[in-house]
Amino acid sequence: MRRRAFLAAAWGALAFPAPAAAQRKSMPVIGYASGGSAKFYEPILPAFREGLRETGYVDGQNVSIEYRWAEGDFDRLPAFVAEFVRRPVDLIAATGGDRAALAGKEASSTIPIVFSAGGEPIAEGLVASLARPGGNLTGVAPRDSHGLRFPAATVAARSPAVRSKLLTHRS
Image 1 (tube, helix red, strand yellow):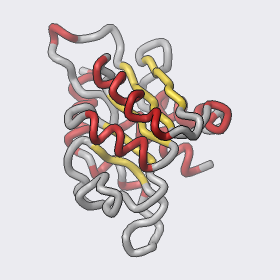
Image 2 (cartoon, rainbow, N blue to C red):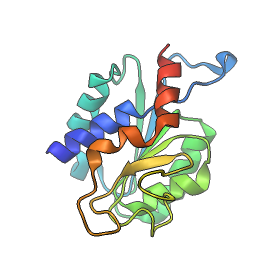
Image 3 (cartoon, rainbow, N blue to C red):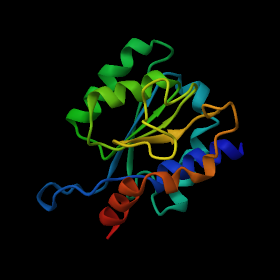
């Protein structure tokens, strides 16, 4: 449960780019793309929402979350993410396996993508390194390339560009 709570807080803390003033929306939108099902994520989502709440975002009040569930049909993920890019959303949360994050990476190089990877993010081509992910992706993985537990608590510090966009959006 601690990992789930952390993921929720990380997604909240790493969120939201600042749109141009002319394009500013009434509230930021998170596109939540998952390879899993709503039923599977039902016990996890309260921690995600609590993490957002801890960073000042309350679903339906000052942030909107749009969910898309692939229900195990991973071929649906690129269409979900493409829809988020066209909309556009302010942040993509990619869960339920590496393929959700890869779909996000292929669809956008500008919208921040926060992922939870099941495999090795460097080997999967998600990030350049764990210390400096580069690009618009950041997230957590169960193990680093040396087989050690990934230091999930440092995710927020690993993406200063995304963190600065959050501060800009909230001001």
